[in-house]
Image (cartoon, rainbow, N blue to C red; front, side, top):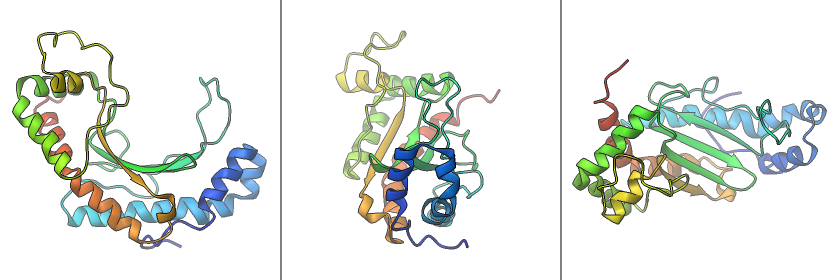
Amino acid sequence: MTGPFSGFGPKAIPFLKALDFHQSGEWFLQNRDLFEQELRDPLGDLVETLTERFAEAGLGLRGDRKKSLFRINRDVRFAKDKRPYNRHLSAILSPDGTKIEQGVFYVHIGLERCFADIAWWQPEPALLLAMRKAVATKPDKFRALVAALKKNRLELEAEGRMKRTPRGFEEISDPDLVAAIRHRHFYVQHVIDPAGIHTADLVDELVDFTLRAKPLLDWGRAIEGKIPKE
């Protein structure tokens, strides 16, 4: 059954704990119905409910239960860690509904933590360069973005930040601009209380977060729109 999101099942996190303990295809197949009922189907409902709410708010982010969810299976072809299953389930809503576009909403329900991001994550080189140039050449706009996020109780995360300033930006000396230019990703994050994933209130929480993060979406989209299409 599908419909409006009403919450993840009470056994969602316990299922992930058990799956992480067993890490067995046989165990997963025996408990697949529980996975679908407690985790996968509710996440699909969440994606499609958020798609409707984001459309109403003019946020330009969408997805569906077939394209937006990441698999619970890990890709272990080139990994040292050969455990076959993730410790989380996640999904992306994007401008075109695929996992390829940048400027996305990402939601992660996992053992260590639950969270949502608005992210320009590992943008391709031309876009990343354009974003860095925007910081360097239009610092007032970038600082206005930072101030808007701060007013909305958000800040750019520093994960993956380079230790050295990339080539071509050596003349930038303002500490806040240097830190921004060293970003490999431009994203903000909202931590979700795991106790709060079991009710429909999670939708309002995530819509509120995305609205507060809209300045980042607007800033990134303005830059992206000026990059020539290949």
